[in-house]
Image 1 (cartoon, one colour):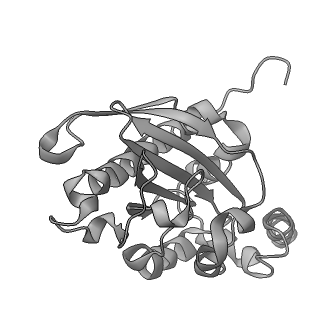
Image 2: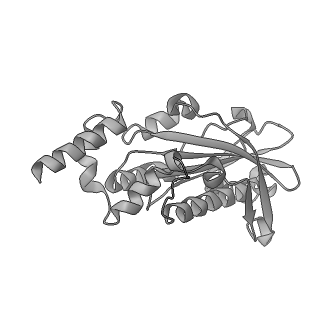
Length: 231
């Protein structure tokens, strides 16, 4: 039994990489009781397609200001690559205690083509305890994420969610589709009622898209993976 535990810990350390170092060895004790579901969620980036994790269409019934319906269409998916360059210095520093296994990114637009949403799924090798710590320290005051396909000055609002039941951070950054700059970008939770992000609905959009991506990820994690024929 002792030998098996040691082998498992060493294997986890190798998969997590040198960035995580010795922390990964202790992560085995932090995995929740439903270990299969947690580990399944952490491997979705490897097992599922972009269309599954970043659906071509997101439906937001009642998700807009005043309960208006929303519908977002995916317009681009970022090429696969390492986490660090895409996340930027602030997010790399915030995620340093848990590391980053893979980052998936895409861009959506609303039905009126007036807004753009740059989204990301950050998969980490973290255990439950580390993820809970990340949520309490990072989620309330998360720095603005980099927005795939958008300049920093175009970011209007953003929402970030550290999932409690999966080693994944989900975020969405909203912007005006015409590319106009925003003087004071604000997190969706602090957009208030009179800021441009709030009055235009961009804060609502960021929160709603983040919520829909969370739901899609949870549904996928709850479904047993079936390898494609011949794989």
